[in-house]
Image 1 (spheres, rainbow, N blue to C red):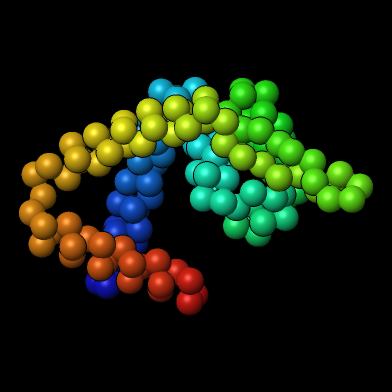
Image 2 (tube, helix red, strand yellow):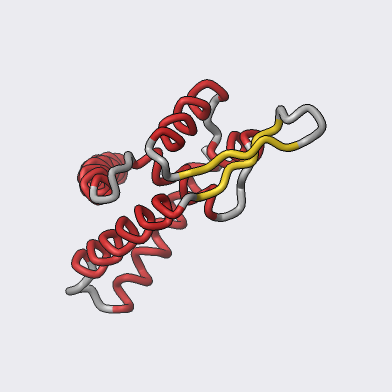
Length: 142
């Protein structure tokens, strides 16, 4: 019986994840970014500003990270600056256009979150957080 419940719970979680990703894709498009680009832009805005630090934080391989950084540069949402004696290390920073995109996406994300949980009590929201954190920890330990 429990195995059946777990499978059902995981199936629901899979469906929720798919729908959430669809909403997230729609939200990030309002800032002309992909979900991956938005995540990377947020990391840069948090001060994670070298390719090495970004690779560690995002767990992206070097080639994928380089492609995403190149796209963000082409879109004009980040800047890069060469530093060091040989000018080989690059420091990334968020451009004004990137700040604007983050604001637009964040506002739309907040609106989505408010609408999603509008009918939920504080207790229900807290219970969901507790259960999701517990599930995340269980997944880390398996």
